Length: 428
Image 1 (tube, rainbow, N blue to C red):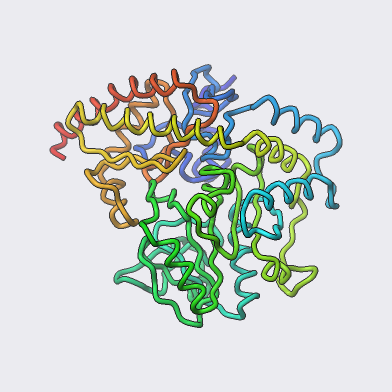
Image 2 (image 1 turned 180 degrees about the vertical axis):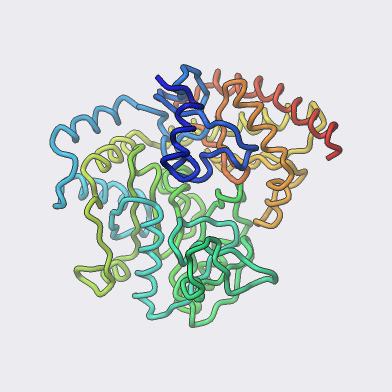
C-alpha cells in the first residue's frame, strides 16, 4: 500500500490542496503530511502505514459510538443488500423521523437531507418563507456550513452587515446577514426573519452559552416574531437524549441536525413546529429537494446509532469528558502552562489561556498563539489524534475506555512539556 507521503503527493495533483475538506491539510497546525486512514475500530484509527492512533476526531463528533460499531455495520450491510438509493420513499425515512421527533421536545416535523450545510441552508429558506422577511442574524465564530449567506464574519463594532468570508460569494449573498458577538443578546426588529445559533459553540473551539443567552434569544425572537433556529449539527444527540434544546431547557422554533443521526454516513435534517414546516414543498411554497435525501443506507445507520443511545450513554460520555478535562488541566499546570479546558457533557475544548473565552474574539487569542500546533503535533507523534485545527473540539466516544483516557493524560504530560519548552524558547 502507498505511504502517507505518496498518497498526499498524488492527491495534491488531483484534489485542491490534496484534501476534500480544508482543515485536513494540516496547514493550520504547521503543515506536514496528513495521515491517510486505512481503517478504524472503536476509539482507534489506523493509517495506511499501519500506525495506530487513539482518535478524538471521531469524524468531528459523528462517530459517537466509535468507529465500525458492530450494530451499525450490520444495519448498513443489511440495508445495502436491498439497494443503496431509489429516489423514492422508504420505511427507514419514516422510522428515523419518528425516532428524532420522539426525542426532541417541540420538534413536530422533520425533513431529511444529505449534509449539515443543506440543513442550515434549507432552514433559513423556510424561516424566510414563513416570516416573509429577509434578514438573518448569526454569531461571530459560529459555523453553519458553507452556503453563501452563512459564510460571513463580523467586521468592526458590535454589529455589522457582513463581508463574505470566501472568494466567489457576491456581496448581495450576505447583504441580509448580520453577524453579532456570541453570548450577547441582540435587540431585534421586525425585519429579522431568523436568528441561527450553535447552542454550544463548537467551531471557535468550545464556548458555552452564558447564563441567560439562549433564553434571551428565545424571548427576543418571540417579541418580534422571528424564527429561532438551533444549529444542532454538532450538539444534536451529543449532549443528551433530546439534544441541546432539552439539555438547556430552551425550545427553538427550528432545528438542524447532522453528524450523530447518520451513524457515520452522510445525512442532515431540519425540522421544527408543524406550522413552519408545512411551508415546505410539496405542501407549501418553499422549495427544497434532494435525490439522495433520506438515503436508505444512511437512515439505517442513523437508526442503529440513535437506538443505542440512552441516558446511561450520556452519563458515561460526560464522565470520560470530565476526567479527560481534569487530567489535561493538571498536566499543563504541572509544567507551568496556562490552559483552560472547558467541557459541556461530551464536548471538550482546549484554550491556551487562563480564562474561558465567551466569544470568538477571545477565542482567537488562543487560536493565534501557535501553542495548539505544538500540542497537536506532539500528541500525534505519540499516537493520539486530535483535530488538526485550533478552533475544533475534542470528541470522546463511547468506545473510549477509562484506560484510553488515562493513557491520553499520560501522553499529554509529555506533550505539555513540549509546549512549555516551546514557550521558553520562543519567549511567549
